[in-house]
Image 1 (cartoon, helix red, strand yellow):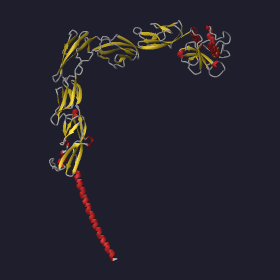
Image 2 (cartoon, one colour):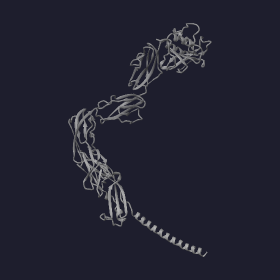
Image 3 (cartoon, rainbow, N blue to C red):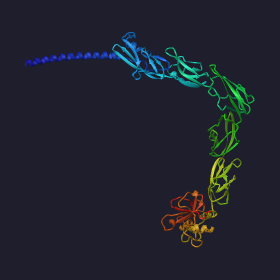
Image 4 (cartoon, rainbow, N blue to C red):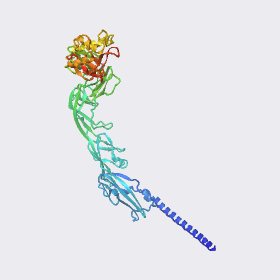
Length: 588
């Protein structure tokens, strides 16, 4: 028992010793962590920026981008580049070990050779601490700039070389570099723009092409009798208050020169010359042909139909003429221009339109009409004449012309008189003040024409449908109607007296006598007045199972003895699948 107690006490003493050693070890680790933390906290940002840009031919020193506060304060100001214990090293980043666009020496000087992008590693070593940061350099070619005198453009180099810190110059003074980083052309000669590099040598940051002043290739134009003006010069914008153009003319009888500018006197042509002096002292002389025009509308009163676009060609102008058509002006009036040379008629009425041609305001009155044809079309027969009447025009001013799409069917003269030449369909086109009006014309045989007219007249009387009384006055079924009409014009369908044949028998006669036109439904444009339309609704054992016939009367209408209406009716032709045959009883 005593031995166990002794062992226990020894064990207690050993446990206490282990705890003391553990505490000491923990303390040492904390001290080490604090030291590491202290060193780590001493590491600040090595570079005050991570990238820069330079133009080809320029140099930069990477040392200039190392943060002095980092070197001085973090290391108690004891940094010394001569001291072997403290140093900065420069080398290309592994992503571009041997770049073609730049060179790098051991002192961190980079020479830009060609455009591109490179990265360099800047390494700082201080005792046992090594810190490396990557620095990016963008290399630009000189900017190519195209500009005209008096124009301003932004200069890309101003984003790299601050205009408040760098003195910009040009090779001949043709460019002004403004404080906001833009440039303005102040001369007429091409130039280059420079900034001083870190090595004191000029770097070319832009090559500037200055477009030369000139006139349009076709010359210029001015209307005779207009006020004095200064012709526009291409690629030339004078500075504010600048009056640096001297004008000369070859013929003072055509154009005079004064302080106010050039005055066009009489229609004709002459040469004018402009001597221009630039802000930097450059001069240039340019010449062109000046045409003195006499512009006017072709008519003092233009007549046009509503909702029509009319092309307007001015008189007395030339290729160099400048026309202001006042497009879209006065859209709430009777007429206005919607495009160059295109006059749109808005609504019926009258209104003046004014445009400017070569400096002269010219005006004409526009009368807007609303022409129309009051009818469905024209139905006739060979030899007949009909007169077309177009309404809604101006009796004194309107112009109406006519043409036939098929002259072999019907001709039309300048007065709108139609002469039917042969059976068929055509369209007469009337052009009234620019509006085209189409009038369908149907020329039937004399018998077909009369039969269709008779059918329409019967439909306008009191009739009843009856098969039993089909031959009595006032009573009809479909086939008796057709036979009783056509028999008046000596077309009997094989039965000259007595009981009228059925619809199927009439169709069979037409087929046997070569009168069939179609064996199916067709558009009404292919039919003529007097044509017969046969229907089949079910099998009945008769020819083509025909059970009904109607007569086409023109203008998309039929006449039928209708059982469902218990009358002879005049109604719209229907192109449907029940139609199995169409015939023309009289062919000529």
